[in-house]
Length: 111
Image (cartoon, rainbow, N blue to C red; front, side, top):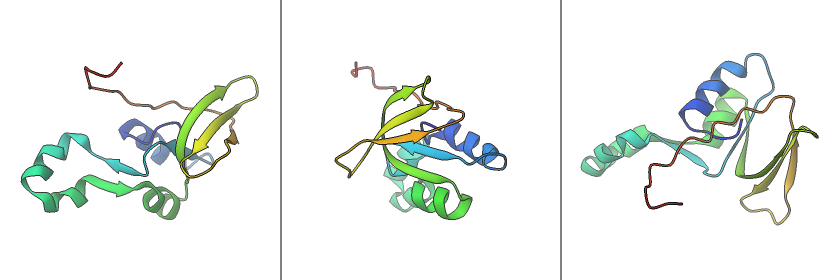
């Protein structure tokens, strides 16, 4: 699953019962962005809006998490090239099925 946002996590929760699931995301943590304004007013609320993917996916759900950026999806070879955050080399992750849940960008200034 490419993307660990709301859709990616919902898919992970359901698919992990039937498949070996790997989630790739460019961030190491999830944040519920609609609640960010509340965290500005009440900073102790931040912990309820975020969690570390490694803790939630690897340890609690038994799902592999890769902290990195997907550079290419090769549908012919059925693999994904991933640049993990701290590695110099790219990793190749094979797949049987690839679900893309990249989310959206609300920034009007971004290309």
